[in-house]
Length: 142
Length: 119
Image 1 (cartoon, rainbow over the protein chains, first blue to last red):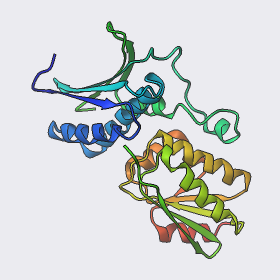
Image 2: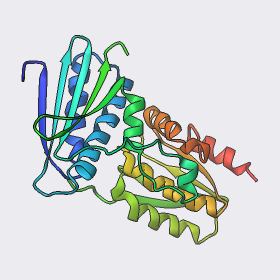
Image 3: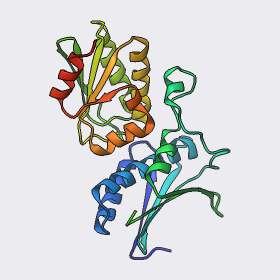
C-alpha cells in the first residue's frame, strides 16, 4: 500500500534506466538521514538489482517493466525490485576473479555478490502475482 | 537510455602508458576500453595506469569489462595501476578482488613514482 513514506518507480526494461532510480533513491535516503557512504552502497545495490531484473528477469522482452518500490519504515529503508521473470533456479555462486582471469569462469555474478555485501539484508521471492522480487533492507544506524 | 561512448586519452609517461577514461564504466564501455587497450598495447608497455573519473558511475557490467582487460594484461605480463576512484569504488574494487591484480594509488603523481620504480 502506498503511503507518504513510499515511492514507486516503473521503468522500461532497458539498461541505463537504473540511473533514474538511483538518483531518486539517493535523494530519498539523504532526506531520511543516511550518510553519503551508505547512500553509495544503496545506489550500487539497487542499480545491480535493476540490471539483473532487466537482463535476467525480463530477459530483454521489449514490453516488460521493472518496478521499484522504496519505503522508509521505522529506522529501515526497504527497497523492492520486481521483474516479470521466474527468479533464480539456484542463487549464483560468488564470482572467483582468479578463475575469471584464467577464462575458467565467465565474468558474471558481481551484481548479486555486491548486493549481498553492501546491504544489511537481501531476499529473493516469488510474489503471488507471478513476479520475482528482490527485497533489500538497510538500517539507518547500520 | 543510451550512454555516451567513453572518451579515452592515451598518454605515455616514461615506460608507463596512461589510459585516461572519461565517463561511466558499464557494459557499454567494452568497445572503447578494448580499443584503447589494443592501441596502448602496440608499444608493448609493461606498465599500464587506468585513470577513472571520480564521479563516474561504475556497475557490474563495467567491472566485467575491466576484468576482461585485466585478463589481457595478465597474459601480457603487464603491471596495472588504478587512480581516480571514489572511496566507494575503491571499496567495491577490493570486494570483487580487482585489487589482488591491480594497485590503487591515491594520486597520479603517487602512481607514476611508484610504478616507475617497478621492475
